[in-house]
Image (cartoon, rainbow, N blue to C red; front, side, top):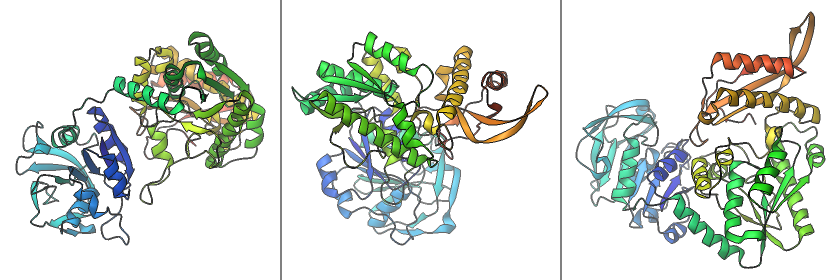
Length: 510
C-alpha cells in the first residue's frame, strides 16, 4: 500500500484518486499518525499532502522524525515538501513567495519522478504561500519555476523527494504520470490492485470475521452502495445476511416498491421492510440545523436496527454501505482539515452501539464500487443508479421537515427524474434532483396573485463526488422542468437552477 499523510489539503482526496487510478491501493491518515502504526502498516511509500498552514504558524503541523527514517520512499507535495526540507535543515521564505495558479516547471536534471512525461518544460498548478530559499547538502534541485528556485528536490540517496506543485489536479497535465512514476517506479508497487482482487480479499475477510454461525443485519437503502455491499456480504455468508429496509418517509417516489422488486424478488436476498416514517418525522419535527438532522436520522436508524436485531435474535453485526468519501468528509484529521458534514452512517452514529459495524466498501470510491457491482453481476439499473443521500429528502428540504413539505418535494423531484430520463442524459450526470427552499415568493397564475414555495434544481457532473461541476443542461430541458413543476406541483410558483460547483458548495444543499 501507499500511505498518504494528510496535512489538510483540499486536494488530498485527489491524490488518493490518482494513486488508485494507477491500480495501487492507498489509504489517507492524519499527518500525526503514530510512527509505530505506520511501521506496522509497512507501506511501500509515503506521500505527504499539501495543507493550508504555513511553516511560520505557531504549532504548524509536522511529522515525527521516524517517518522519514522508515526506509521507504517519501514524496512531499507543497507543504509536504517543506516538511521534508525542514527536517533536513532547509530554509524557507514566507508570505512574499505566494504563488497561486498556473506556472511553468523547468526540469533541470533527469529523475525517475519525471520519466515518460516528455520535454523539460511543463505547465503545473501552484498553490503555496511559502517556498524554499536554500536547501541543505542532503538535497539537490531537480526542477524550478520562475517563482520557485526549488520547485522539485531530491535527497542524495534518492529516497526523499519534494515538489512545490500539485500533480493531483487536472491543471497539471503531467501530474498523473508523475504520481504513477512515484508509486510504480520509485516505490516498486506492481500496479495490480483490481476490483476482482478486492472482492476475493473481502469475501475472505467477511467469512473470517463473521464466522460460521453469526448473523448480519444489513442497512439496505436501495442505492448503489448498500446494494453492492449487500450482494458482496450475501455471497460471503448466504442466508445469514438479513437485510432490513427502513421506510423513513424521506424517500423518493416509488423507492420502496422498486427495492422490494429488485432485492426481495430478483436477487433472492432475505429482506424485511419496516415502516418507521412516523418515528422519523416525529424526531425531525421543528429541527432546522442540517447537522442535527443528519445525527437524528443516524441515531434513529441505529435505534430501529437494534430493535430489529433483538426481535430477530442472533444478529451480532450491522452492515452498511459506507464509502471512503463518507469517511473523509465526516472525520477531521486534527486541525487542518475540517469536518464538512456528518454522514448518517459515519459521523451521525451514536457512540454507544450494541451491534458491531461491518463496512466492506469503506476504502472505496464510488466509481470503484460500481465496478465491484458489475463484477458481482448486478445490472445497470442498480450499478448505474445515481447517488442518493442516506438521510434522503430530509437534506434536500432546507428548513423543517414535515409530511406536507416532503410530499411537495417528492412530486417536484419526480418531474426532474422523469425529464432527465426522457432526455437520455442520466448517464452523463452524477446527480440531478430538486431542493425545496425555506422561502416563498410572489407569483401570478391565471388572474390571481400567488405566494408559494421555490424549488431549486441541482444537476452536477463528477467522477467520484469529491469534486463536481454544475451541468450545463439544455435551456429547453430546464424550461420543460420548470413548466411542469409549476403546473403539476401545487404549492410551487418559482423554479431556479443551481450553478455552483463543488467546491465551494457541496453537492447536497444540507
